[in-house]
Length: 91
Image (cartoon, rainbow, N blue to C red; front, top):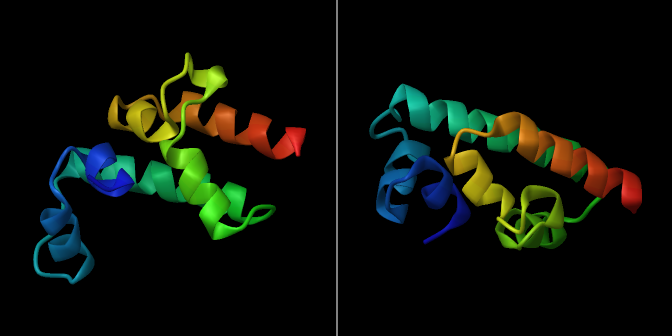
């Protein structure tokens, strides 16, 4: 399962349908995707895309060893953003 599918609590095929404009995501999934995008934009300012991808799916000590994707899936957007800020300030 890809990180966006995990965060939105759907399968990858559903995410692809959203991306292709076939259907719109439900409100809760859209909030999670928007939060992930904001975190991505913050990280993008100082990290390469492969590093960002690894950051989203890797265990994070700032998040009690959950991945940022799992935290966003649990609607803990502020915690994910705080972890991203800590990551960018430590590099």
